[in-house]
Amino acid sequence: MKNPLDSIPGTIVSGLILTVVLYFFLKNFILAGV
Amino acid sequence: MELVPAIARWIHFLAGITWIGLLYYFNLVQVPALKDAAADGTAAGITKHVAPRALFWFRWSALVTWLAGAALLGAGFTAAFTLQPEMAPIGIGAWLGTIMLFNVWGLIWPNQKKILGMKPATDEEKAKARRIAFLASRTNMMLSIPMLFFMAGGLSHRALFGL
Image (cartoon, rainbow over all chains, first blue to last red; front, side, top):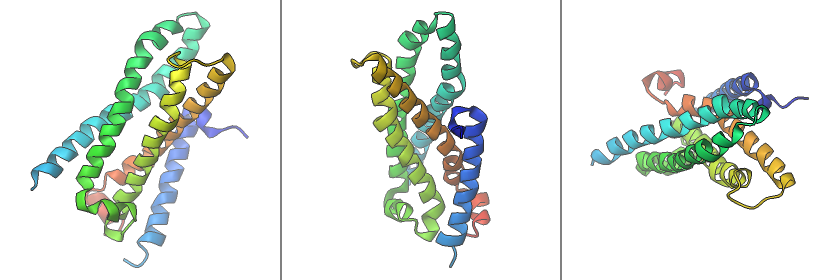
């Protein structure tokens, strides 16, 4: 499999996916009881 | 004293724009330009005159950004890094920024010194250094996307997180 970081579009898409993952991590785990 | 956080925020933004601006310059302009320049034998101009200057401002602005950010967090520094609910969004941004700072000083700069001939290295070591520095730089570009999202913890973001 090709490393997504080898291309600019792959890097940006990876960053966007990581943003969504971290958002849900924060919302559902860290801030779950707030 | 309200002057310290106000100045810290100002410096954090100035240095942060310099750092991330140069990060995007490296990834969007210099790396593709070097590929073309190597093909027509003009890469030396970039590696000799442009890259060392860009790297100087890049690595030092990274450090200043982090230090000004730490000053801005002030008493909330520990709460941010331990992801206490009120400080959790900015804490995620702070962690991402810290990983990025490590990549700059621990991976990109030491390997760029070999690539640019500031530190002796064989061709094989240079090729390895080029790949490590490239991936660390691309990783930072990727991390900058969520980092900026979580750093921009204004009212809109607090509403989004339900804070």
